[in-house]
Amino acid sequence: MAHSPDSLALDVAVPVYNEQAALERSIRTLHAYLSTQLDVPWRITIADNASTDDTPQIADRLAESLAGVVAVHLAEKGRGRALKQVWLASKAHVLAYVDVDLSTDLSALPPLIAPLLSGHSDVAIGTRLARGSRVVRGGRREFVSRSYNLLLRGTMAVRFSDAQCGFKAVRREVAQELVPLIEDNGWFFDTELLIIAERCGLRIHEVPVDWIDDPESKVDIVSTAREDLKGMLRVGRSIMTGRVPVGSIYAELGRRTFEQPRTASFFGQVVRFGAIGVFSTAAYALLYLLFQVGMSAQLANFLALLVTAVVNTAANRRFTFGVRGRSGAATHQFQGLVVFGVAWLITSGSLVGLHAIDPGASAQAQLIVLTVANLFATLVRFVLLRLWVFRQQRRPAASIPSSPVRKVTAS
Image (tube, rainbow, N blue to C red; front, side, top):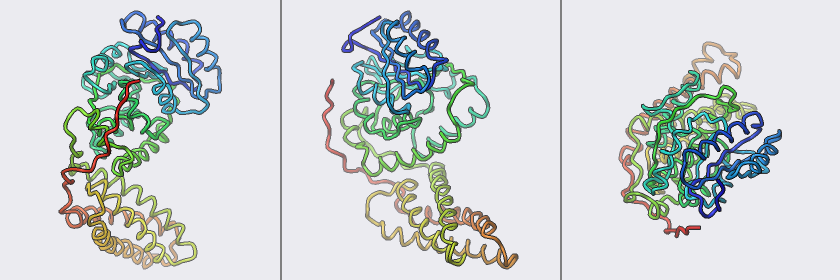
């Protein structure tokens, strides 16, 4: 079913990298489904991102033999990079993507795109975590997925349930606004898109899906989770600093009156503080190892704790307790240094105790004791920051300056 680009209602992207074994079967299955189940003009775009096997040749052969299939080849790897290129180049009314393994049952596609075609919603996602979903996968992946989405909701105060399901769609005019703002070119692309969309007041439609895990998936869970945590901190910083112009997009596309994101609940504050604390502890350990070469253990501990304390206070001020702007920043840092003094006494006391027990303790032993003490000191810091330093600043300002409204031009 061939259609001119300007008449397309739906463009389904299939990002692939070294998928020679699954590509042809999956594209033919998707093509057959769209041909028989959809009555709107559609297209399938195979987005090959720098494959090194026979994937490019198979993609070209499919594009030549199947009407409504095109192949795009990128010189660099990255699922997010592939989606950025094909979505921004497409003129279809609705832009979607599915994983090449077709883990998500295609019967969820019509209800996924329907509210976007009608204009009722702006972004649509398949969710494996809704009550009506049916999911088959191993316990490890289930635990990682649920933990990730719980952490995401706790730290970013979002409402959508499943950020990682490879089954999503977006209206073209929304994609034209949001996609250029997304920094990630890999697996965090989906999460970043959804966070920005929700912050901008866009309507996110969720569809329960039937999903079967692909046992041959190439996704490295550990490295992906690590990069996702970095991505959460980065996108949160981008929103807070205004790099993402939430105000102007909200005014142009938002579904309700602009309002500040809600102040995080106590649980949300604990999760955010904990995430910042983990990174701070890791940074502290690294700095201590660097400083203790050529100086005493006490001085190395003091300097490492001082540097991380300043950064930790600034991060918690903005992300955990929602305090923005420069007003009171110096006072908060001064109070934070007082809290740092308490933490330093705790960690220094642990070091004194270690040397009293084992005067010849190795650097590794000192690091272990200090890391444990620093974790305890971190708990003390949270209590003092919440009940003293930021006690009067838990509620964000009623309004924030918004960026100039940008005109959205339909292409």
